[in-house]
Figure 1 (cartoon, rainbow, N blue to C red):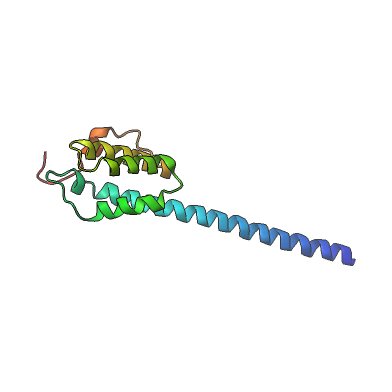
Figure 2: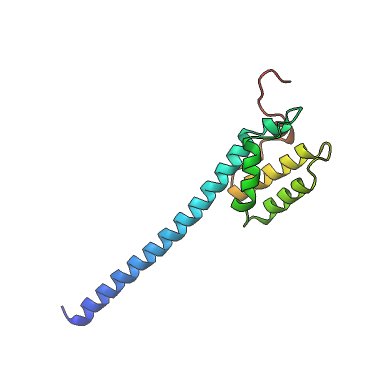
Length: 132
């Protein structure tokens, strides 16, 4: 084997390794960001009963998730716009639930979670024991 063939083999191996590491790092970063978004969305959806209950609980997990969402979804303009609208309309009667549904739909789109089979009333009325 001549030195040119050895050099080409080593260079191609190194290049292949560098490309592999770069692709792996990109995929991991993308996957990690999506995982974080889905976690925030999951916590908001799972605790939405605290927001839509009458009277509304003005504390707890859904508010933590909403506050985190501005950071986690900063690269999702539609989610940020829905959050801004929700924030601007805080305290306006009847707007919280409408805005919550919009925010949840935009979060679902941004995370690739299909909610097409669920209507708005499903999102507006979470599972709560003893409530109709």
